[in-house]
Length: 214
Image (cartoon, rainbow, N blue to C red; front, side):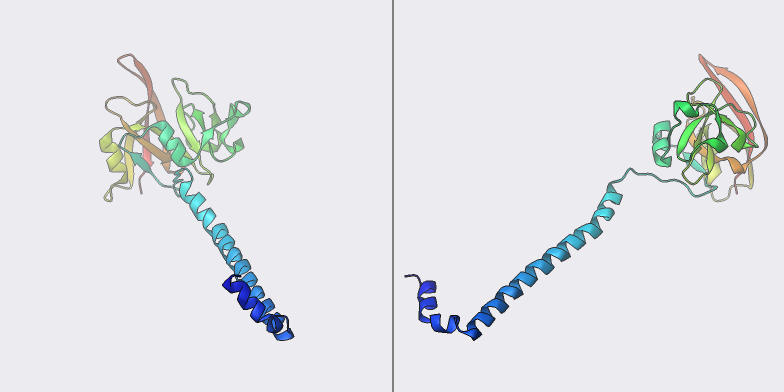
């Protein structure tokens, strides 16, 4: 006979009395309540922590505030800035729609003309030689994407930059224009002038514009 069984046998009268039953039920109830409460606490903690974990693992997007100029002089590709801006290519059904008709969170390509009225620009799904890339951010802001020289890129974001900057933006990168920039349309002033240039075997467009840097 085990020690536990002997103890129960020796105390059988007390255990099955009214007092003994109340005590046993109380002990069982206590542990039952403790287990249930602990389970709810863990579950609640997980539900609270899960969104934070998910947020930390989400794609690294950094949609800029309205009017922000971005200048990337490192090894940043068009795909990198598309991911950063959280934009996707417009659908085939949206090809040639005006900017104002497109949803937010998309990118496409525009002919370099009429930049003083960006909402009226026709946006194309696929890149062709004369086009520039544009992003319609999830904030609704429209930005122009292109390439400039590294010095111009630094000049655009330096603390002592002037209020206005004259610059040339290229629709493709080349040896003298390797820095990728994102320019808000609302800060492009006056009319811009597009030029056709050929460097080696590369055909490209150069866009001369006045930009409000401050």
